[in-house]
Image 1 (cartoon, rainbow, N blue to C red):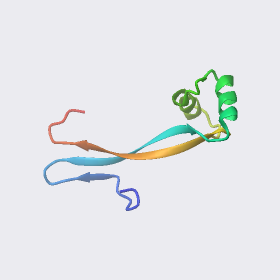
Image 2 (cartoon, rainbow, N blue to C red):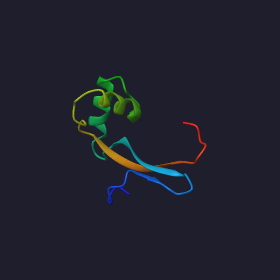
Image 3 (cartoon, helix red, strand yellow):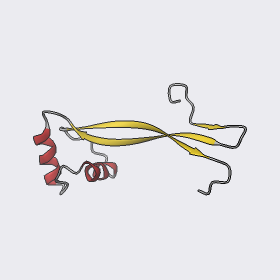
Image 4 (cartoon, rainbow, N blue to C red):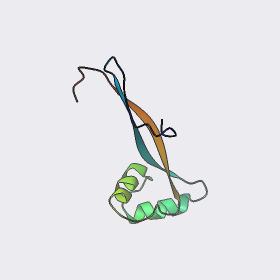
Length: 84
């Protein structure tokens, strides 16, 4: 859908499909020590990539060395009569 520039589709039957994206953090192989050092400095040890992503989401800092941000695309389907 993204390649074609489509964000939203509504079918004659009333079903709607919209494209959404989700970003996640993963630790880059070979940079685990950098990721752990950054996480320790920001109280996100485990390395808790969910907390690290939340910290980065509220800052203008670039993704730190040792992390890689990936984007996953998914569909949201709604049928007529579904409540929001």
